[in-house]
Length: 253
Length: 318
Image (cartoon, rainbow over all chains, first blue to last red; front, side, top):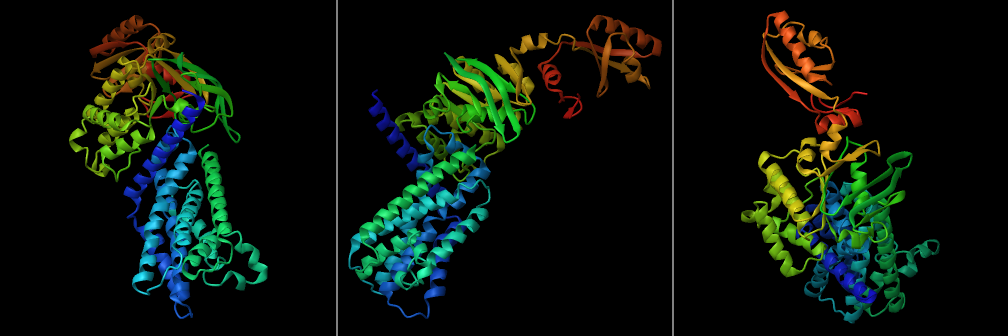
């Protein structure tokens, strides 16, 4: 077998393994109470706490709710599943399989990604059915949901690399990052209204770009060029994936 | 080509030297036992050989593939049965097997055929669709072993495969180890059960404090300590100070009380038997039974590691 053919074969093997890991996570973890609370209820209550009583059209509120839901749901599976797998020693099974750590990280992220897409449909459908919120441009909505979900799923996998057997340890660290993201990403406060001194932080939040894309689907306007949003989300995905790969390798040792 | 080749392997965790210049090889088709007390370096060795941990220095190859630079290719040759029964208890035994098969790139047709064979072999076929959270410890262990064999490996790492199991599971697993050996599969077995190593292994290595203390066949290792032979004697009635007085018999180096019997360690069993008879006559007591024993693998283990395991629980004797 030529080197190229072997490389293609191994790539296929890596995707098969990643999909097997994702499927396994879906069967085992989707109905775990922590995941339901973190993925569905928590973002809803957070949103209600900050949105109720504030002036705002559904076309402004719904994209924000979708973005927050994606943030919390996509990043909630791995911080629960991986510490549990460490405790049960099933994680050793994954990291000793004949696939790269990238495949393991990808597989874990895939489950969060798919879960998040399913959950994001709830506020999306609610927007249409209850508030009759029109989507003026579906393309950024689809791309936004896909990239933002994958980005935060990878972020969840990255945080889950911390070598603990307790999901609570990771969730607390993760919330230290997730909660501030809501306020610096243009969901409740438009990016341009954020004080100048804090403006630069906005650019370091993947939620800024995800929210901007989803918002574009409803309002037709964006704070950044959609290509910038897409590029930045891809950069964050690659960054999280590579960092996760490195940290899992380091902590396994 | 050897199945495993380990050369000058060293692993440091900060100041702690977990493995110190370890060298050994395992021939293809061999059943190789890896014995050592807790903390001796067994798990670190397995983690390095399975590509989970990177050595500080030295090399290890699996069928000629370097475990650090050709990790994936080396892992394709092996099946791993971890120390804990690491199965997914929310999945059925069939789902567990199919998941592992997918991780090891076993084709769909092959994985179903192999899955059925293994579940039948381990007596789990009838319960293949049940979630495994209701399985007994022995059933979980058998499933773990089946998962380690789903890819038809050339080399199997078995980490404490029978630890704490019921007799039935123990026997099934030992039979499987023998079958694997008969099929030419190389088996790397770590165990605390020295008798298991004695019964199943072609060769054993004893590791202590990160260094290999001895490697040879169980019988050759036993021959290195011929001085540790023993005479087991039962007396009726047992004289009040029997343990102390039996120690006074010429050539007896140590006396242990085992229930209603005494075990006298010696280099010259016939002389000790004569001494015991004379002692019984002098004490007006009757010798109910006398048995002589050669050195066991456990004696070798104790001699090399300084760990007492059999008669007085676990304690350091040096």
